[in-house]
Structure formats: C-alpha cells, structure tokens
Amino acid sequence: MGKKREVYYGWYIVAVGCISLAMTTGVVNNCFSQFMKPVCEDMGITRQQMSLIQTVFSFSQMFFAMLWGSLSKRIHLHKSMCFCAVMMPIIYACYGLMQEIWMGYVVSVLITPFFYIISMAVFNYIIGNWFVKNRGLAIGLASMGTGIGGMVMNTLSSQLIIHIGWRMTYAVLAVIMFILVVPPMILIVREKPEDKGLKPYGWEEAEAERMAREQNGSDQVAQTEKFEGYTFAEAIRMPVFWAVVFCSVSMVVSIMSFYPTLAPHLSDSGYSVTFAALMTSVSMGALAIGKVTLGRMFDKLGNRTAVTIACLCTLAGTIGMIFCTSTIALAFIVLGVGLGCSFGAVCMPIIVQNIFGMKDYNSIYSKLTVATNLGSALAPVITGRTYDVCGSYVPAYIGVAILTVISIIVLRVYLPKEKRV
Image (cartoon, rainbow, N blue to C red; front, side, top):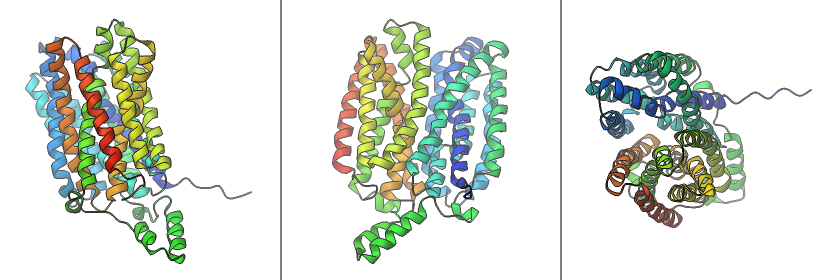
C-alpha cells in the first residue's frame, strides 16, 4: 500500500481565506441591507442617511488602499492580520451602539484598516505567494466565501433581527466573526511557503519545465520562466496597465449598477417581494460557484479568454435586467451575477499577478483598488439618480451595457492570451 499523499499546506490557507471572507465581506457588505429598514425605523432616519454608512466605508477603503502599497512593506503581515482579526469584530459590534447616525459614519472609518488587512486584497496576495499551479482555482475557492457568507449570514441576521433586535444582532454577528476568524488566522495563515519550509504549489513542475527548455537552448523561454514582475513605476508606463485600469473601473461600475438594484427592479417589474428575495439568494449562490469556475478558467484558458467570458456574462446579466419580464432573462441575470460579478474578486488579482508579477503586487493592486472603489461608490449614485429622474433603472442598464461592450473591445486589444507579457 502506497503512502498517503499529504494535503499541501497552501490549501489550508485557502480554506481560512474562504471562512474569513465569509465572515468579513460576507457580513459587513452583504448583510448590510438586512439592517436598513429596522435601523431607519428605530432611529427615525432616512434610507439615504443609512446608505451613507456604506458610502463612507467605500471612500475610507479607497483612501486606505492608496497607503497600502507602501505600508505593506513596513509591517509584519501575519502579525498585523492577527491583530486586525481581533479588532475587526470589536469595531463591528459598535454599529449596534449607534445613538445618532454620525456615529455609524465614524465606525465605518474606524473599521476600514482592520477590514482591509484581512480582506480579499491581502488574501489574494498571500495565495499568489503559495501557488504557481492552480492559482486561479485557489483564488476562486477563497473568494467564494463572500457569496457563501452572504447566503448564510443574510438568513441568520434577518432572523436574529426579528427575535432579538438589530442592536443585539450586531453583537452576535461580531462574536461569531471572532470565533471563526481569529483562531485559524493565528494558527494557520502564513505569508509565504518559506515560512513553513515549503515551496509554492507547482514549483517543482515549473522548475523542471524551465530546466528542460534551457537544455534545449531556448534562452528566451528560460528568461520568461524566470519572470519576477514589474515595479509600480514600471507598470504605469505600460499601455496594458491603463487598459486594465479602464476596464476594471468600467466593469465595477457595470456590476454595481445592476446587482445591488436586482431586488427593487424585479419588484418594480411586477414580481413579488418574495420572488425578488429568492432571486437574490439564488444569485448569491451562483456568485459563490462562479468565482471558483472563473478562477479555473484562468488556469485552463488564459487571461484574455477568461476575462472576455466574465465581461460577456456581465453584459448578459445587464441585458437580462432590461428584459427581466421574460423568463429566459432571469437565467441571464443569474449567469451575470455568477460569472460577471466575480470580475472584481477573481479577474483583477489574477491579471495583476499573471501580467505584472508578484514583485510589487501590493503597490500595483492597491492602486487599482483605489480606482475600482471609486467606481463602486459612484455606481449607486448614478443608478439612484437615474431612477429619480426616469422612474426606472433601465436607462442606466443600457448605459452600462454599452460601457461593457467597450471594455470587452479594449481587453481584446491589449490583454495578452498567455499568462504573462
């Protein structure tokens, strides 16, 4: 009987990333809507005032992302993540102590650095260190936590609010967050495989292939295999960098224009509130599956093909929203959320790692995050204003559909087929 093959340690980090993202992004972002109505009714505030909590949070993340590139070079990443894992639930519970709405805005600012350092952006960097082979799959598996967290915690938080009130619900979610995130963050997560005396997953195969090509006299290929990456200063001089910036912002605007308006638009179009909520839950499930699928596409199909598929699915979802009274259009919406809305979580980090390398990943990706956070903050304003003026979200959907088509064209021109330039 052969010796049982051990599970590569990097997969444990992927699992921790999935759980952490489920309890951070999956709670803080994806459960926010559950608190909208009860908080507004209890505190006597408008929904616009409550929504500003998320807007302040988005702008705070954008500001912190500008600092992260230089900050990440000066701190011990794992120790910082452990500290943030402890502080995050403590600050989150403070939402339940709000007496005035400005207090919620202050909490949103305070929670930002703790949220960011244990967020998808940092886990994508760590996973990139641990995986050469199946990197797309690993990132997809970790990022699916946001969808799983959204499905599970939305249901839990809605029931908790009914039975114990919104203030205690914040406290209970904070306790669950602490229990599920802090211990594995301390015991399992490590920044690099060298910290455990290991090599990145798939390193042996990549090294063997490189040596074989060197022996065949292919110096150019050998240099490509030794590719470490570019600095931020080098990257900004490359046309492909600005193509990625434009398309990332455009896609985030498109995604954040149609996905957050899914439930109200279906309700406005004649569907029941119950059905609209069901569609939202189904879409969240599709999002979790879509992230893994899209990550696998990068491994198998390459950058340009995988990104094109994601963009086309976003376009399909937007068109589905325009014609949502048709049954087949509902399937387009689920497809759009599943693969299209996975763009920010999966496509952007893999593109940065595959094209610009890991040499200055934190600086390049954090600057890209600044731009996408701005798009994420502006999209709700655009769709909200469109609805106020036109009485429908459809004109906004038409606009973002055109923007998506432009993004596809730009990506097809500038993005290389292979994993690296």
